[in-house]
Image (tube, rainbow, N blue to C red):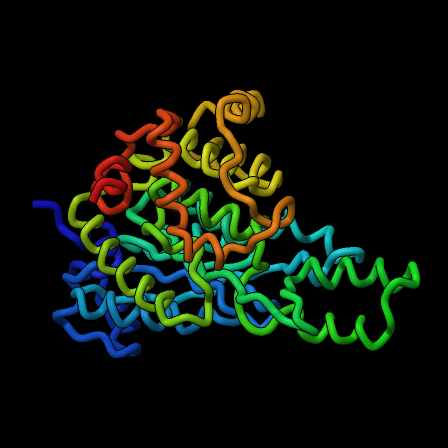
Length: 356
């Protein structure tokens, strides 16, 4: 039987590791804990951006579930850069670079401390591919927990999202919007925590990770303020413990067929073109043969099924109410456009998951 602490025992077992254990005792560990799997919780919480400001409750929920399942949770942080805040300034030079920094920070902790598994929790654009690249790099049992989308804002009977504020700037500059209404849109476009509400980069990547099999069903379209995000984080932690027991690793899941499923969902939902550069990086990291021509191959055979912003009318919360990504995948599956034999982090195949 596989030892659940196969990696972490490298720093906890034997006479020579007495100093190591002393440092764990300083954090409240007991002798019985050293046979438990040590599971990293890569916590993207920060108050830099609303995308990440609601993540701490998810990290706390994951820690609670990990400890209840017999693991020892080890929380560490990851940075983030908000495109919505940095846009139009020199700060944007750090945006894409932050993807690599996030991947590096997770890899450093998981491999530097010999963790047996990892829960990656993120919200903003580069948290998503950065976290997935780290999972592929370290290739220890891992799961992605998305922080959730923002709820729509409202002003004078209109539903708003972050793009409403960008559009208001143009309308005000051209004289079609009053200063009062510009301020009204500005103050109501983002009503609380969560990632930008349309099928922008964060929601595109979260949806594709669900289709990839690295996140739980329905988790990619939940609204951050809703309790179901915490429940999903708890369930994700439980699923990860089972994945550690079964030795299911990211590279068992992130295959060419699985990436085809992820890209099919991106096309069907009218997702962000940023997914192209991110999946090229994820595929490269996972050792999967994937080129820009593969995106065109998938585009030609995949219809757009969803009327989602920015090209359409609706937000991610609306998609969630309509059945979320599983409903999109079921439609693709019925049309023969999904690889149903791909493994997911739950241990089920995509087909089994959609038919359950």
